[in-house]
Length: 132
Ligand code: ZN
Image (cartoon, rainbow, N blue to C red; front, side):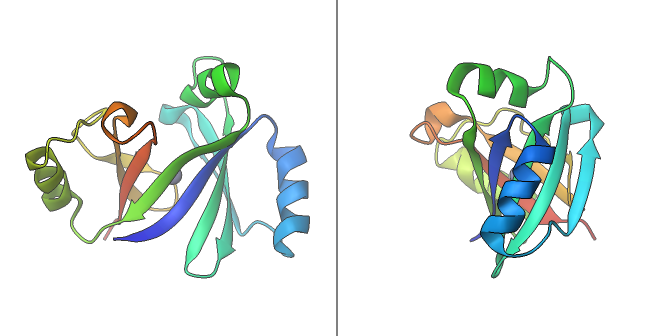
């Protein structure tokens, strides 16, 4: 598993795109809405990994709830996997809990699934696999 990206919850993509463009020394290469997840995302390359900024697109969005509770900041760590179904089975066998065991379509042409932070030291972990 490699770290595919880090997800960062932000209040405003406008403001944070400006901030991260200055921080990374380059503009976001992609902005994408995932309506079913209630998020708009913006991606930056960081070597082999990426930074994913996440803005809530409605009040029910998990990102809106996260920011309400904890404020802006690191929201999740995403591991890139070759076979997401095999990894789900392996991790279930290791006793990890999932928010949902069924991979869904995420941003950036990925199938994604999230482990429950209760089983991962409070860290929201995403597994993601490139869609073929
Ligand atoms: Zn992510």
